Image 1: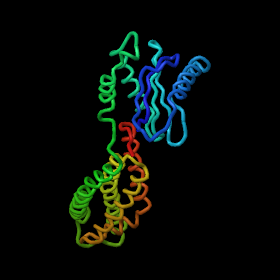
Image 2 (image 1 turned 135 degrees about the vertical axis):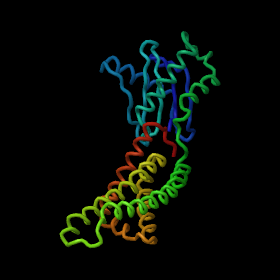
Image 3 (image 1 turned 180 degrees about the vertical axis):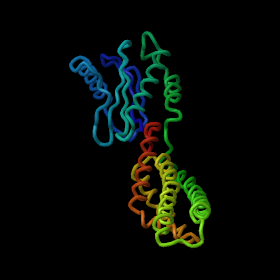
Image 4 (image 1 turned 90 degrees about the vertical axis):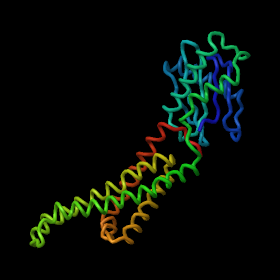
Length: 270
């Protein structure tokens, strides 16, 4: 979540600032001097640009300089926000700022309404819903998806096994070990992939919170087990139990992938 946003000259002259979070207490005068000193030091002493710095207490500073115009856009954001996403937003806002207010950048001529429009246009579509709404939305999709995938899995799995692998009424012991059991293992793995990959990927993307995404994964596994135990295909529940470590790793892994994918596209709100 973006908490503070500033545009200033390289010499430390503040041109524009916006406070998104009133709960955070920062001294703007101290911050502006610190930002300018940090940017100038990195550029002159290190001959490179510092893009971000950890400020502690769930805060980090993101900087984007525009060398030709000698302007610096900075933002204080939550430590969990993606650096590349914030830098992209700062770059676009600063470019629109230059296009609107160049060449003199007089603070008196920088209108609040115009800046609000510029910021809104660049943040629109990149701001996530609050966490509670994300959790509700995730389960509004997970529950019907869970029912659909399990119905699809039970019907298709039975069809595949009956039509492709049970061609004879009686199998010898060797055929059971060499044909039937390998077929059951392959179908079981397909079951795990179908039932657990897509829902957890979607859950991680929608929840956009690592801990709650993992919690959703655990709840989803339990829900699947209950559904299987109370259907005529309860055998699948025992299959999941047999593969439980793999099921857990798949669920957690794809929840994390979904979370990381969403994090690069959304500013996270608590």
